[in-house]
Picture 1 (cartoon, helix red, strand yellow):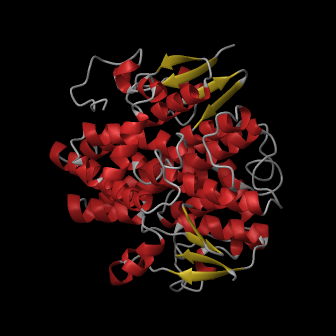
Picture 2 (cartoon, rainbow over the protein chains, first blue to last red):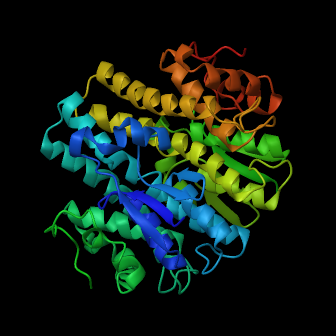
Length: 226
Length: 226
């Protein structure tokens, strides 16, 4: 059976795994899960049976279902080691994982769809303050990332060296979000240089929002290709 | 030079690494970073030079500084493989990493100190609603975890098998938070059984809040040992 990925076009975590699958050259089928329609298809009993945490992405390989984007990517790295998405030595792997988590742990979950909905619905936060919230956590996290990558001796065309890897995989979807949220990205020159390098590669472009089978028209906020 | 860990007694992410260091039997020194005093010691220039993401924990081993708790633990696992904290085969490792991230990605960051402060200070959210927020995300995440672990064939005395590993390392600090936040944990019988197994081990007890050199007295909300 072909590898399947339950995915939503605008989901950053899904986007990460789509890039990883493309970089690894793993033939796969995308199964769209709409996070908004019908109260969110991820909350259906059918989907919850597959993934009790009711989030995307979910990877199905043979009999196995794996959730959590970074756990999926680590799995792909172990089972399909080429091309590698992590460095060879332990200390560099730790560095790359830490930067990836600076995005996946400390930026993304706080601005996730369900969190923004809770802010507005349950706490009565205005749309304006909700946007300020999103921008605040993105700016804080991307600032730290810009500092770290600017002074990193191991950064090359990409976040680590001259081939794309785990940091780039997490960075690009986050930059999509930042641009979509109207964040001024001019204060992140290093990140935007890496972003443009990535978006020159078909593996990233094909994983992007507007290329998905469930994409809902061209979003005006979709960032420029280059 | 002895391994050093920059840590705050109540920080869940620091707590995770303290448990991992204890389980691996790695001799280390704790350097306290107070997340509240003086506007937060993690925001000092001195600390930011070491860790631009201005969070704890930070591990110093020789010339290397590693941040992000899960990146640190993966590093420790690679450099000090015994006793292992991850299963042997790739699919089980993916499972364990996913459950750990269900906590470290999808519960913890949303209820982190800096997030709660922003809610109250910047959005004017009441203390009551702030507590409801914390409880909401914990309940949601722990519910999912309870479901997954209850039906897991690989769960034993601990979340995976009969020796403590990465899920347990993430679970125990989160249960500390849940108990401290007054969450009713009776709906998580599987999680609480695992929690009690863990808290019967000195490696977990010695990493706990009240055993830290920077602990601020016995907190009345500290959960029962057993």
